[in-house]
Amino acid sequence: MKFAWIDLRTVPEAHRTAVVDAAVHSRVAGVVADDPALLDGLPPTITRVLLVDSPLDSPHLVITPVDDQDRLDRLPSRSAFVTVSDDRTLKLACAAAERLDHTVVHFTDPTKIPLEIVIAAADGAPGKLITVVHDLVEAAIVLECLEHGSDGVLMAPADATEVFKLARLLEASSPPLSLTTLTVESLTHNGLGDRVCVDTASHFAEDEGILVGSFSSGFVLCCSETHPLPYMPTRPFRVNAGALHSYVLGPANRTNYLSELRSGSKVLAVNADGRTRELTVGRAKLESRPMLTITARSPEGVVVDLMVQDDWHVRVLGPGGKVLNVTELRPGDELLGHIASEQRHVGLPIGEFCKES
Image 1: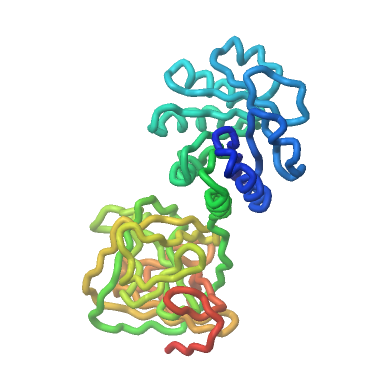
Image 2: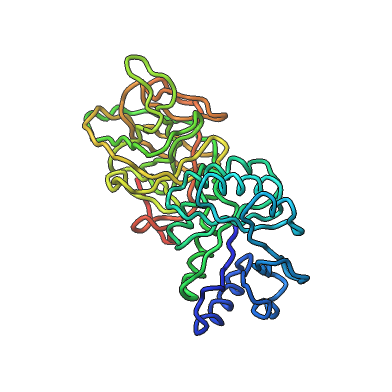
């Protein structure tokens, strides 16, 4: 679990009480100060971190600044603060992250290359890496750097509002989805229509795709172009998704029409086990092509429709991540899909009566 520590050292005294209250109510993992008196009244649910130049006999977690290898070797505690400004201090941060329980790192340069090096050095180490960040934008980057991210972030908030925003950032995750097996009932050739290819800024895994459907009640897991195709190279960032009117499932259980996707939009990558992750759309490409409608049904009797390009190279995923070419589907074949329990209004789930056909 990613976590955040709030740094009180530079928070103005006028805002300090509100910031501490926000940290307690939003269940921030820790509060850092250089004055023990600021930590004494905190509840035991929060890690009280004392950052001091000289180790003290304190009931709190004591973190000591370290600026050379000799000081690191003689460190009486299992926690250190390292400022990285050159190759020597970068190596020091790596050594600390490999062996200490807590390593707080402040990078003086804006590039994230040194952070990537420390993350790689600490991979598999039992301790926690905490990175100093200047704002919420940097916190979001640091938490995902190198697909692993720093274990935690240390931020000095401007006010209580920033504490709550940081807590929400940490809660932002992509929970798994419950996938179901759909049985194909019919296939209909529709003639010419407009279909959308969704090109993302990330690679898809071989058993990943996006969930697309004509109705808000159900979606089919459309396969990416990660697998080899005749006559054309693979495009592991692309899903040939379906007709422009189709719903595509995105983060936070929200849908968009495929026609609405733009560079910078968000979609949800879903694998055959239901694991999800948020992806950024790099481009949405609309072209006129012959179309094919796949009609399938869930075990509960929910009808799911998907209109896709009528071509062999367009594929969907079946149970176990089996790759299925849409023009070779037959009634009785099984697909992976997702059934939604709510109807939709401007992409948001809502419990109202709505009939789609």
